[in-house]
Amino acid sequence: MNLTDYLPVLNKLTESERTLLSSSATLRTYGKGEIIHGGNAQCTGLILVCSGQIRAYTCSADGREITLYRLFERDICLFSASCMMNSIQFDITLAAEKDTTVVIIPPDTYRKVMNVSAPLANFTNEVMASRFSDVMWLIDQIMWKSFDKRLASFLTEESKIEDSDTLHITHELIGRHLGSPREVVTRMLKYFADEGMVRLSRGTIVITDAQALEALSAEKY
Amino acid sequence: MNLTDYLPVLNKLTESERTLLSSSATLRTYGKGEIIHGGNAQCTGLILVCSGQIRAYTCSADGREITLYRLFERDICLFSASCMMNSIQFDITLAAEKDTTVVIIPPDTYRKVMNVSAPLANFTNEVMASRFSDVMWLIDQIMWKSFDKRLASFLTEESKIEDSDTLHITHELIGRHLGSPREVVTRMLKYFADEGMVRLSRGTIVITDAQALEALSAEKY
Image (cartoon, rainbow over all chains, first blue to last red):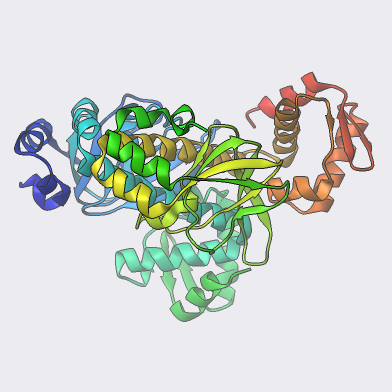
């Protein structure tokens, strides 16, 4: 595997910086459902997704969850290397949503190069700004959007990710994505079914009116 | 005014970089309540607080507000210079909460130096990580904390900022900080008054049991 293919910013580094990062990087594979980086665990390192899909989420003290963002091929997670920066005062959990292969760069090595390399530091800035934008979008959703619109938005997004109208997902898991109790998800899905937007069966949701669902998710308030 | 006093990272830059930033910086004063950077307005620039207090907030499509964080002396706001980074896909509003003096560095100048300076790019990273931590704390609050705890937390923080048990603030304004309707704030404050934690009069809230209020705000769930 050529690291530069996944991390084009390496082309802007010196030969020795590039070698240092490449030689420290390790490839790891996680099965669907496995925790890649967890809670207040150790500082795993910078994670670069080669294939698969990762869910980044945060937990309440009593174990409730909400999805912050998803990472797909070529995406990067900085917060699994939070020890790299003094000002990161929070922790997130990363779990493989599909079988996933990642490259992990040790935090000490990445920090060492970033400290002296303007290109790598600026690249890191852009990655963080991109996650910041994801989280600001989430605040907008949870503050101002009613649950029906958030659920419609989630189903629409899932359908795009899976490229299918048939979603194999439990109400419990949707609740964990949206930070809501399962019963609330079930109640709203039944309403969607009554309105002809979805058809429900055990462990499966079939989107029957994608247009209506998308229109609902796009409503401002 | 010596910019280096407020921005010690300048000591790590070259003489010409330091001169470029210092010579482009302008001092501006805003009266209490004035908008410093607004909505989808122009890209104001990097803002450095010399004195006063700034509220950073975000708005819903129908004009509801929630406070993201506050900026005090020596704090820096990057997001008023969001055009500096392609990946910043959101906008915030900054308003002076007290008479405020700031230094503004034009975004083009700051970006030009940051692009070639590892120290400035790394400093920018730390500033962004710090704001990211503020916003993650906010998500934790709005997702998992009931409104009584959030209100108790807000009153405790206000009392610390003002160094006083007497807060001159309307229920309407508290609602804008917390993203909640005024009626909800009024109802909860009345409950706090019944419990002996505050005393209410027109435009004023007196904290009468700071310990109880702080204990409530510290409850996990």
